[in-house]
Image (cartoon, rainbow, N blue to C red; front, side):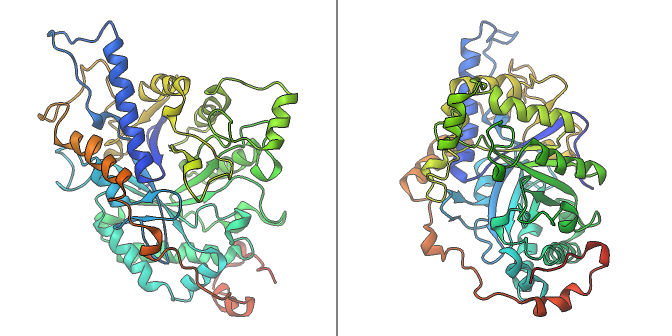
Length: 452
């Protein structure tokens, strides 16, 4: 089952590191509480002030990254230079508040895992059986994970020229199929029912004009969801390499043709919400041309238009200050914390938290347990909120608001990348001759000619 939500419903996911996810939830809770305090209708009918729980602002899904070589960032923390990745840590931040979950330890929240496969060389190692032990470790994690659902992006942004899959798309297909097949063979029926396999395009120009989405596609049997990235494609000044809306729509039309639910798997306004990290070329464009000065409408509004046009099933927003992360410093992503911009924060509250977009409902934590059938919409007036009997500021709130942020900032929660061993890429490179026996098992319709 794909767990496609009902029409006009979209799961909300937030990433992509532990601190940024926690910042999102706490800042949204803080903002909503102040909106309630400032409201003239801030008391319930029995005369008592209605109370919101922090659990009301937990998204349906947390984003996290790992690589098949090490699998760090799942059951133990790591930092690739882009903040602390720690899937289990994210689930620990906001444990299930729903007594009806299948297991008492199961989280109401899902995971969206980006699994790096290390380009064509990594795919060759997978298909040659050299990574079987790592695949079994991955299977073990998926089996025991407390996440309500897991969206596994295998070799995410496979068509990004810098990611190394473009010289042999057929090898990527084989690796994708092998991991899916191994998971289906070794996972229990219950665990397999919680894992969805995502095929994710970067929705920008490919390395060669001879390449196409079809040449990378593993087949309907192996793909549950189709993903797309949206960074700067919505901008009129997006450079050629950054893609355009036609690139995004090409992927979404491909998904429609294959009847697959769609996920905006990575998204953030490139250049920053306020364009403070915009490139020099962008600044020249902005100086010479009219453009939308509304920090919300310029990017967020256009992304919502895409969501409505294609009935996108999941929106994954990367909420972070990229400039503070060594991997992304001065790359150009900029400041994209929602809380950094009052106008954007206000619009997010009205349109996403309060579901103010016409004919669109954004789904939060707990919605994946029944695939969006009973979304449990947040009632910010307090009449629909279910109390856990512990009051608004219980132990879980102390843990989320005080203890975890303190540990993260102090460094006690951070396990340095070099201590964990970092990401060790396999040395060497497979030749076409080595790969040919593996490729021979593919049918002609899905085989692409490997680069010489």
